[in-house]
Length: 318
Image 1 (tube, rainbow, N blue to C red):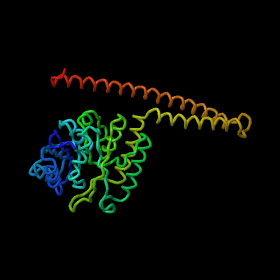
Image 2: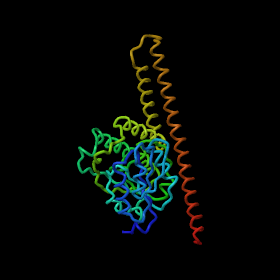
Image 3: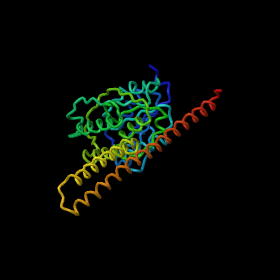
C-alpha cells in the first residue's frame, strides 16, 4: 500500500454547530494522517466550533452561505491538494478507516472511494425512515445509471484532485453527496466502496437533517440530474408515454360508441393529435440535448488532456 503520509492530502470537514465533537474529529484525523492538513469549514455556527477546531490544530475557514453544498463548493475552490478526504464533523465516521479509504485513490485504482456505512447499532445510528430513504435513493441511481453502488449518500469519501476541480456543484443542501456520486457516474470515473463503521452521534450532538424535507430534496435532485445527464432516456420515456396515450385515444375515437357528430369524439381526436405532437417534441428534445451533452463531454475531455500536457511540460518533461 502506498504510504499516504508521503502525499499532499487535505482532510475536509464541513461543520455547523459541532462543538461537542469537532475536537475529537480533528485530533483523530491528525493522528491517523500526521502529514495531512485538516480543514474545518464553519458554516455559520452559533457555538464554539471554530475556536475548538483551531485549538485542536485544524485550519479553520468560514462559509457564510448556509447549506452543505455551498460549503463543499467552497472547499473545492479554496483548498488545493493532490488527494482529498471528506468527512462530517459529528464523529459518526471513524478516522481509523481513513487509510483504507485513501489507498485506492493514491494507488490509482479509483477516482473516488466511498465509505459504505455499516451501522454499529442501526436502530440508534439511523433515524426513522432513513434506511428506507437510502434504499430508495440508491435504487433510483443504480437503475438510472446502470450502477451497483451500495451507499449513495455517505459523507465519508476520498477522491483525487481531478474530481475536486472538475465536478460542478449545483446542489446546496444535504443532496450534495448524491450529486457527487452522480457526477462521477456520468463522467465514467471509477468509484470504489470500502465498508466503514457508522456510529451513532455522541451525546450533545444533534442531527441537522430533516427526514422528509431533505428526503424530497434528494429525490427531486435525482430526477433533475436524470433529466440533465440522461436526456434521451428521460425525454424518450415521456415520448413513449405520450405516444401510447395518443394511440389509445385514437383507437377510442375510432372504435368507441359515439353519437353522430359527437363533440366529445372530436375532442378525443384533437387530444390524440396533441399527444402525438407532444411525443415527437419530447423525443426531439431528448435527441438534441443528448447531442449537446455529448459535445460538452468531448470538449471537457480535450481540455483535460490539453491541461495535462501543459502541466507535464511545466514540470520539465519533454
